[in-house]
Image 1: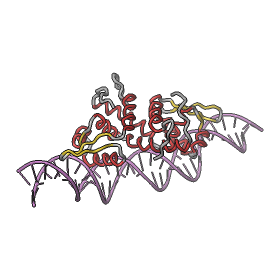
Image 2 (image 1 turned 180 degrees about the vertical axis):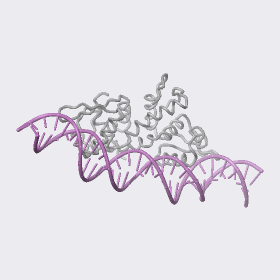
Image 3 (image 1 turned 135 degrees about the horizontal axis):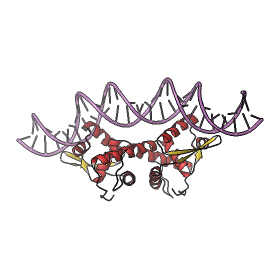
Image 4 (image 1 turned 90 degrees about the vertical axis):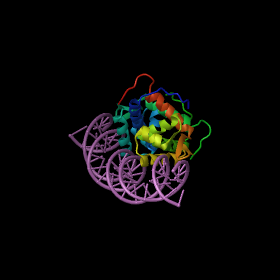
Length: 111
Length: 111
DNA sequence: TCCAAATATCAGTTGACAATAATATATCAT
DNA sequence: ATGATATATTATTGTCAACTGATATTTGGA
């Protein structure tokens, strides 16, 4: 890493860290991360997510509730279904980075 | 986000997610994130970190212990002091992204 | 060898998060 | 209005991570 980040005052740094940590906490759970990856690929409704991720419904809704309250995702009702999409572009940026690091195009390396 | 990531099989994706989540968990704590930022700026010893971050010693050592065991940091003894530095370049990449997102050069936005 | 400084480890407590089960709400079709 | 489907909420419980306090280990200097 280039050693030259913008110099930032300790107080501001703490503030930034608080924000960053809030986002990281949301990502730091395997099911929720996969969930966000799925939504990032394109909006999906709860039953689709339930099927693709094999998480059972109340748990899924609870997690989605967290993401909603934190402003990370948007919802849109279409008849009986509710579609989720990513709202916070910063989340997408982090997801991009994670893809780049942990999902290399050719070789997949498991633990 | 461009909708085109490398297509990755569900199993491999789960493996990648497991790895990513392990890293994210380490970052998803304010003190530990600040700690890593500090170390990323240049190697530092425990007492320096203790002073700069105002975390008391056993807690700090415990956190550093976690980072050590997970292969995220390297240690190097110099006399009575032990110096820490980042070992895992992937951590640096994530930290870079977080800086870009949450520590914009000019305007600092809190909360 | 003995002491002080730096760091690490251990045991106990607490608090936050996630899973589950049960129930509630909203929408559509009849 | 009634039933069925999709989603949300609530209460309960179990698990794990982090803080604290006390103690151990390592090193350098007297």
